Image 1 (cartoon, helix red, strand yellow):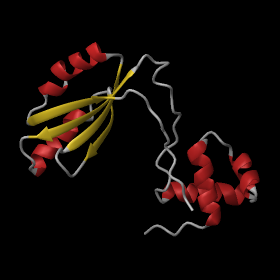
Image 2 (cartoon, rainbow, N blue to C red; image 1 turned 90 degrees about the vertical axis):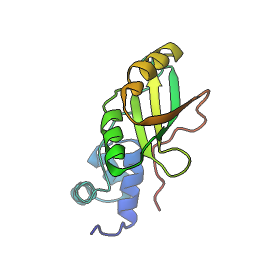
Image 3 (tube, rainbow, N blue to C red; image 1 turned 135 degrees about the vertical axis):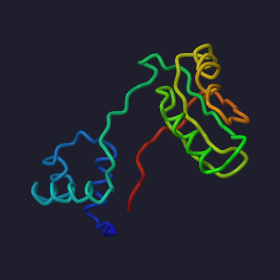
Length: 155
């Protein structure tokens, strides 16, 4: 069972969510603790699963991924085996950035980044269509991203 977050833990998490490259010394100075207890708190947050991993967020446009697609998928059959088979298949594609199992009229939402519409068409025809049990696939093309935040405000 994870321990409750106190004010210092909350400050650490908020800082790291906005810049995971901060050094312990910098975090310690910002929250008003010395380095050693700050380091111990960060390690505790990692060990208890509050921190999953540290990443750099890259600009997909600079990498030539100009098209973001939000794709909904409905399966023909929703048995546990069918869901697991779809999940194991879809997570293998590098174009698929996120997979969310949802409740509602569809079974999954996929976030897909590709170069352009032609690349997406080829991806759907050659890759996604190869997955068994898909009943319906609906694609929504992102025209503009108004808010793109990865941080969850804590406290």
